[in-house]
Image (cartoon, rainbow, N blue to C red):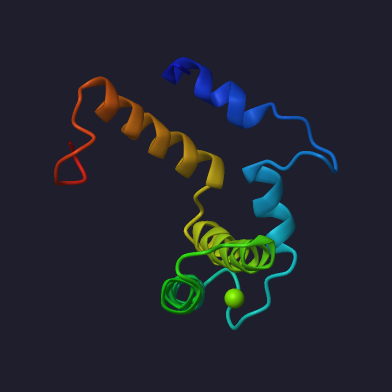
Length: 129
Ligand SMILES: [Mg+2]
């Protein structure tokens, strides 16, 4: 179990290189591929893209249930992985537009979830449990 005090170290000091990817590196590299109107002043475009790509993941899962009896082979897994990558790309652009680092999002999210787990309130309702 990783304690909250170790989270910054894990997310910050993973070595850069071809074998490793960090949220920080991904956010920077993906931003270099971002082309859309009013870049750096447009949180709406990546929000719409995020919804669209999420819909593509959902559609693929629907078809796996409908046509494949929930069987996910190597090819389907690869296709899903690419769609999840598209979701990640738009999430990263939205975070960048909002001037939030993906590291910060990941750290705050896991801290919240670990706190809920520790307090045995993972089940339940509300964002501020
Ligand atoms: Mg896609």
